[in-house]
Image (cartoon, rainbow, N blue to C red):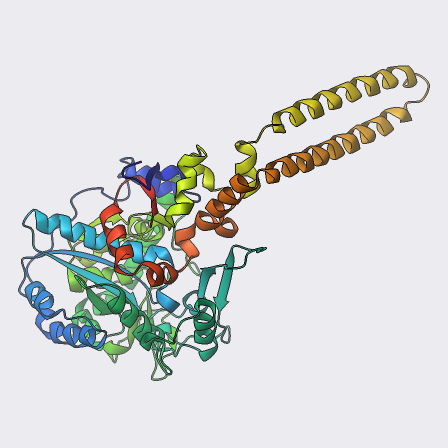
Amino acid sequence: MSEPGCYRIPLDRYPGMSRFVLDWLSGDERFLPRTGGQRPSAVHDSRGRLSSTLIDSNRRWGLDVKSEVERWAAGGTFTIVSGQQVGFAGGPLFTLVKIASLLKMKRDNEARGVPTTVFFWLATEDHDFAEAATIALPSREENRQRDLVWLRAMRPADSREVVGRTLIPESLTGQLVNMLTIDRPKWLRPGITFGESFAELIGTALDGGFILVDSLLPELRRAGAPLLQSIVKKWNDMQSALAKRSAELVRAGYAPQIVPREDASYTLLYKVDASGNRELMQKPEAIDAIENISTSAVTRPLLQDFVLRPDVFVGGPAEVSYYAQVAPLHQLLNVPMPRIALRGHMLVGPRRVVRAISRFDIKPEEVFQTAEQLAAAHEPKGVAAVRSIADEAERQLKTQIEKIREIALPADHAVARSIDRSIGHIEYHFKKLNERAIRGLVRKDKEKFHAMRELVSTFYPDQHVQDRVVAWLPFWLDHGKNLIERLISEVEPDVPAFKIVSL
């Protein structure tokens, strides 16, 4: 525990954490360096042409980034980059924690006199509508059966329209406004797209200190034209390099983050037509209009690193794994690769909920189970007695049945099978009876059980780690700028630990 209401926990206790990332944080640099990175060279020729577009687009979203963009365009600033898909209502909590990680690193740098520019890449070109149009909110029902309420919108499964230019469905907006009982905000006005809504919400919630980059900007594609042309020219070499690195990862016992298509080739580029539909480029072909080219999970980091020339890229576990897989392509295409850093991991909850951890002497990592399991582990008086009595009764019954087996077996060998079946039934019913009695005793301690139920439903709702699925918006509506400052002050990027923080 670092400060009151803040618990620091080893990252290997975070459910589902990537084994590759844990090994990498521990110093395994076979596939990805932990330090250094290729220092970007001279100022990119396209910075001047891209700058005015970045200033204008951010101004539209409520952010004044003119001085920061101009300082970056002139060269000489330390540059940090991260990004995220433009999820509905700002996406899950980890999106905000990722931005907090960037701002924490910037503050630390500038406190040491290092001018720092932060870019946040808006993945508007993705076409995974189901992911962008799904968000989870904490349930507000008293006697709830589920911890989360999921808001979703659907569209035809075969649609390939890029999400950033897709209008937010009115049904989705209505669900959110009704669930949170709020007035309809400007960033959810009728006719707004997922991309514009996400950017405006980020601009409203935070005071700046970063530059948003719409990945669909034509100027971004023009700035990356030499790289995109090089990808087409070295298409087959890239396929071979990816296949080789993927095989190396498999031999090391890791599952590659990016998998090839059925024909064993990797997706490198798409084309976006006039209607915003994203069509796969299955083989190298001449690029007629560079503005219509869209990158994949393989080539997005390359475009980002080519144009923005970051010193550090901050990503989640999946993005760190992406870099481990595509690292050979940086050298192949002569693109400087930044140092890779893991975003901070944080879970947040009301002070009264977090207080139960110390009040009931709970280990913070114990919240990642069911409320019944947590309560049973901190069992009230009587549970141990029930367990002891049930175990002794089961033992005695088995002893007596074994005596019956010894007497009856010489007379009828079929008795043995019947006895074995009976023992199985008895063990099953004893366990059910035992569990039922324990649940009853646990629930009798209502205050303690209620506190544990709230702990689990806050940090591990419906068996999901909070920051992966739960929207940050409700926390911001309740705490405003205090939430942002709390996240920035407590977040720890690039360390093998995560935090539970009270608000």
